[in-house]
Image 1 (spheres, helix red, strand yellow):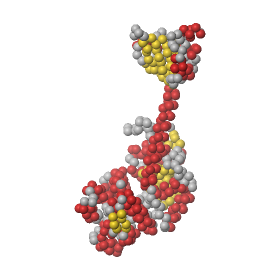
Image 2 (cartoon, rainbow, N blue to C red; image 1 turned 180 degrees about the vertical axis):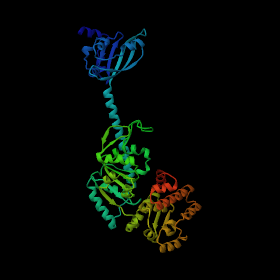
Image 3 (cartoon, rainbow, N blue to C red; image 1 turned 90 degrees about the horizontal axis):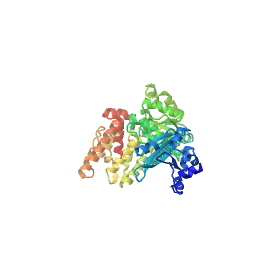
Image 4 (cartoon, rainbow, N blue to C red; image 1 turned 90 degrees about the vertical axis):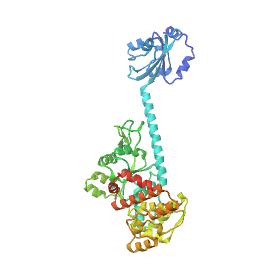
Length: 487
């Protein structure tokens, strides 16, 4: 055996063994007759056969002996072309063979060099790479949401008994992992209280992610919440994508306007709340998630249950810790502090020098605020972007707001503003003045008019669904336009 091994290796430099052992793939070198000339250490590991046994043996003998089901040498010698094949060893290990011909001076195949890789290890590497990509995607998205959260954060004005009571409730609930259900009209600041709950909890250092359920198309809702695997559907990301539940793992997931969820998603959400497991779209593999759920809605969920539009079992799963946020009209002690806060925010952002006249602050406190805190913020932003400096007076307020005041105050405020108290008219006079003075472009003016129309219809209808139906658009378009008006 020793002579045969020595003869087989004749003509191959001794240092080649050390070079071949540096290669991470298995290397198998045979001559045109199929005789084994060289193998490296990695090939020994992959095949389970030693160099001393292999060197000098014919590859056909190894097949006949049942060590492998196939070899590349005969095919490559015959065709003179590279070849690839899947080889299954005696132990059932799957190896990928890629062979290349080496020609002599007469153009004949002199050697066949075969690179050998373990399919099992390749699969593991792909899985590791996939996991790393998911991790990168998860933290990229988390950073995006954390940044957005910082930008959107609003102050908690705690000057009234109603808010003090809510803060006491939040303090107790935050110490637990209980599911929280926030109830209140649109624009009352439910997301602010959700973030407050997260910051006071043991999960404060982990992600807080808010999902606006109505803004996600129903066809994409499942993949957005639970993620998807590669090729799960047309348009799916090539490497798959974690959903919001996975992104919020260890932290808090806020499901805003949960009353808008379609029945099919209500059932899937119920299973997640019960089992704490999700399944990506296109997969059968379950994944454990540790997420605290805070749900919010402006709907009467008990009535939705009675009407058959919301699952009773999901409703009972959600109503563990129920916190009701009163509308702004019942928290009037907060109106002026909030208005001043928003004024500071937007004058800083747009580099303005403005202040509220006392009559305006009085008018703000008397107004009914059907759109709550969100309406107040939008109003202040609108006032800031249409003026550059000086005092904001009654004449700067929208005519619709004058119409929303009490009857007696409406007349005096309208007279001071120099306009009739018409609650249905849009605020076109100030826009026309801005256009005439060249202080405002047509595009910006039209966007402001559109926003006034959208807000007015939303106030009248009481819900985004009804408002979208009256306007002849879908809910996602309504949300997009409202947000565009806030930008």
